Amino acid sequence: MFRSWRIPCCFGLLSRSVLRNPSAGNLGDPILSFTSRRLFLHTRGNWDAHVDSIFVEKCPSPEFDTGCTYCRPEFPADKPVKIGATLNGTVPLIKRHLLVSSGHSEWPSRTEFERNSFQAKLRELQRQGVRRDPDFNFIITSTALSPANPPEDQSWSLYMYPDGLYFPRIPYSKGEAFIKRFLIPSRSHEGEGVENEIDIFREESPIVAICAHTARDARCGIVGPMLQAEFEQVLGSKGLLYDPRTKQGIRITLVSHVGGHAYAGNIIYFRGDGSSIWYGLVNPEHVQGIVKETIEGGQIIRELYRGELMVKS
Image (cartoon, rainbow, N blue to C red; front, top):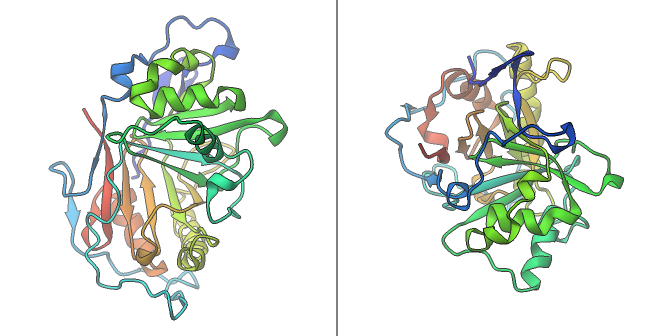
């Protein structure tokens, strides 16, 4: 069965637990201590075989045809994918990964040029002289997941990994403080206290993120929707697809550029414990094997494996 961590509480088992919810009144001290040291202590990227990882060499063949299981994407002649390439180590070494809920998948080629995007706020700060720390690399990915609030609320909703946190409402006015606090260790003190002014939840629901950034590269734009449809069919047939009524199951979303167009289709499986597995050269015929071996079985398929972002104990 897929790994869906749940936190026991007085209302039963929930897939999200409150860490900080200022709107609910005084909850006392936050469950998570956001000292500057702890903020950047427990993340690490790893693009080699991890001692705790269990690998299978090949992706199993499909057991049934959904109708397009054996469909093959047709890529432009001048943009082939690297069939047979060694995938391990083909993603950047990162310490933190943010998934921003945009509610759509029609992103411009560069998401930092999308009006009011979280990436645009980062670009604005960089133009003002706020620089990234060279030893703390992070990436920000837009998703088609719906934000928690309407556009007129002027806020962002985002997930942060490998911390496994969900921020349903970050007001635009808190963007600078949030970025400094969580993404720039050398300037974290300048955003201190912002965590006490925004809602924070522990996120344990698994997510399958599929690159489909058409404006950035046609390859992911072609194969991404095919993979989305196949995952929906396969997970749905097993009763594992996310149900908004119960808020249980695995969510599937299209996402913006994650790097490696030549390895399309690219998917990232966020397992629910904060860690994530990156796969490349994925076709619809691989989806049943990924569900069986990785989502249900907890094993990594070596022939598709690009790397993983782990929680440091």
